[in-house]
Length: 229
Image (cartoon, rainbow, N blue to C red; front, side, top):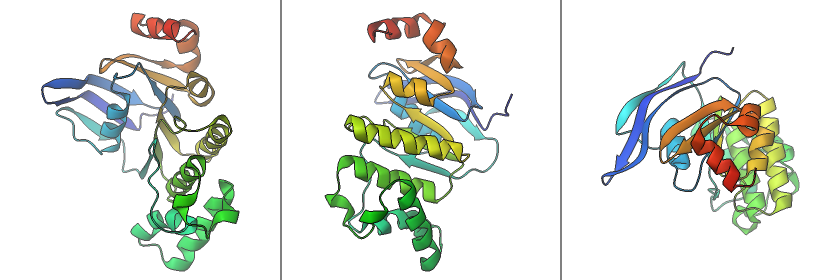
């Protein structure tokens, strides 16, 4: 079994007296982890806690070693500049000189199928194209872990398939993927393991095949039944 790269111990977040995530303890070892659960289960909050965007109100989080992280959101963050400059921005922040960052950004645009749009203003592109820009920008820094929050939720089927292809290539290149989604088909195709949340509590952590064939927790079984699985 692979060694765990991230440990959570009784991790929790309460805001305004409302429990959002409660007592989550787990160790992540898989290359591709998908977080599932009904609306309001705390999936995106848990993802942000893992990434460090939110500070937990209880418990702790420990990385096995120092790791480079990146995150892509459901609504991609697109800067008011060219497509190429958007992708190069993460490298610029890390101090990469201009020739190298523009060369790397160009390579990433080719990988996500946007090389022909490099000089276009990023904000005039479609939602699917903007999400591919965000993925290219994240991929350009060669992250050890890529967090994805509902990356296909707002996209049409063709754009969703292209984003899924890119996620697969990023994972194949060695980046660990931790992703939330409502798309159970996407979860089946991408995940190696499933984390199932219910009302902020981790009800199940299991291999993807086992989860969809015979989920262990009653909460997960009820969820899958409601989803027609």
